[in-house]
Length: 83
Image (tube, rainbow, N blue to C red; front, side, top):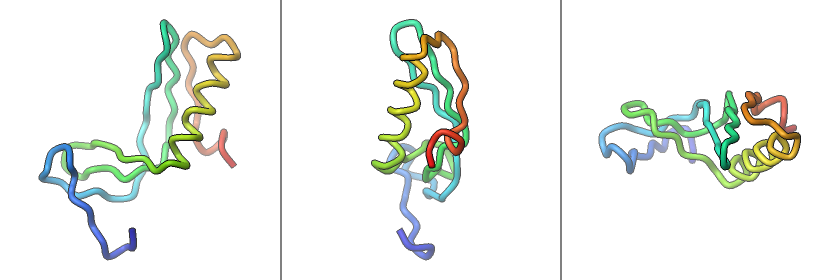
């Protein structure tokens, strides 16, 4: 998406998606991993976040690594885990 293109939020249908970051919590069984500073397009009205495929793959890797390390509750920063 070029800087002049603005996409409407399909969730609230009111706001516009803008580049930004968000925090996401991923869970499996009784484990929870919070990942901060995740790049996303974020709705300026409702806050719903949209991720591209590369970000989703990286989130899965961060989540898996924390679970594999035995974490029940973990907080990770996206930028420090993906280069």
